[in-house]
Length: 286
Length: 201
Image (cartoon, rainbow over all chains, first blue to last red):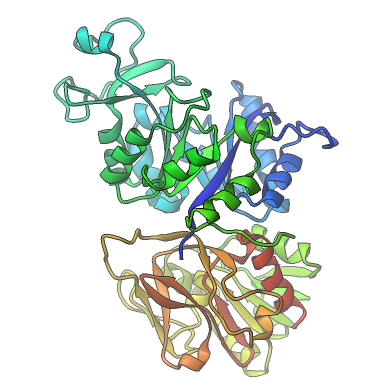
C-alpha cells in the first residue's frame, strides 16, 4: 500500500541550516548534509530544503548543498526558494534534487509551471502555495487592490482565479506577508492544470503556532486536485499529523520547528501513525 | 566492477553514488566494447520509453548489451531501464524494447481513486527466494515514480509485486537479467541492500 509521507523541512541560509535538527551531539549543527542524515536515519520519507538566501552567491551555495546531499543521503528531496527560471530548475535537478519547489515565481509567471513540467516531467515540479484565511477586514473593503498587494499582471479582477465572496483562503507571497488577490483553492487546481506534480500547501495562519494544520484548507485543496498534497504549517502534536492525513486528505505532512526543536521525532510520528492504522513506512535503517 | 551504461538518459550520479556507498567500483561508459566485456551491467533510465530506446540505439548500444547478456553478464535495469528489457511499450505510441524478458509496458488504468504517476513509498511483496532480495523483508518499502508498469508474460519472471490498484511486477528477473521499477538509489536501506545484493551477486 502506498504510504503517507512525513517530510521534515530544513531552512538553509547561505549553505547553512538555520532551522534543522537542534542536536547537541552533532559536530556541526549547521551542516545541511549532517542534518539530512539525522532525519534520514529517523525515517524521513523525503526532505525539503527551503533556500532562504537572498543573494546570488547564496543560491550558488545551495547547488553545492544539493550535490552533497544527493551524494550521501539516499531518499528523495526537494529544493525550493529562489528558483525563478527553467534554467534554475535544470541546475538544481542536475545537482541531484529530485524535485524543485516554486512559489512566488509561479504566481508571477504561471507558464513557468508548464515549461518546467514539459522539460523535466510533472513529478519534478512542486508548486508551493502560502495561503491565509481571508480576514473580515479584507472582505469588508471588497478585496481592494490597494497598497501592499502584489496582484500579478495576468490576474484580471473578473478572472475566475480572483478572490470573491465565495473564497475562504488567499494566496500570499514574499514569505506570507503580501496578498495577491488569488483564491488559494482555485490556484491549486490551476497549478495542476498547468502541469504541477504536487502541491506543498502552507497555512500561514497555522505556521509557527503549533496549533494544528488548517484541516479545512488542506481538505479543500486535496478535493480540488488529483495530484498529491503536502500539508504544512501548524504541526504541534502527534494527533495533528493524523488529522492532516485523514480528515485533511493530505498525502504527506511537513514540519520544520517541531522536529528542529526535538519536540517530536520523526520516529515518534511514524510509530503513532502506524498505531492509528495510517499506512507509513517504518523499518530498519542503514 | 560495475559498468553503468551511459546513453544520455538517466540519473547516473545518484545511482553511481549509491553503488559506491555499498562498496562497488563503478565505471560509466557509452563505449560498446566496454559494455560487451563488462563484468556486470547497470542500465539506468528516466523519462519516456521511446526517447530512451532511441537514445540507446542511436549510440549503437543495443547489440553490445545483447552480446553481453548472451555471454551471461548480469544486467540490472532501473526504472525506465527495467522497462527497456521488455518486448515493447505503449507509452506515446508503440516502441520495441530489448526483448530480453517477454512482456509489454502498459499504462496504469485511469481510475479516479489512484493518482498517476504512482509516486511515493510502496511495498515489495515477495517470497524471499531471489538473491536480489537477500535481507529485504516481504513488505519493505521502496520509492517509486512512474506512470507505466511492466506486464510480463511469464509469471515466473516476477520476483516481487507491488499493489497499486492491482498488483504489478516491481522486480523482474530471468537468469542473469534483472529489472527494478523503483528508484533503488532513493529507497534508503531497502534500495541500498538490493544494490548491495546485485553488486555481490
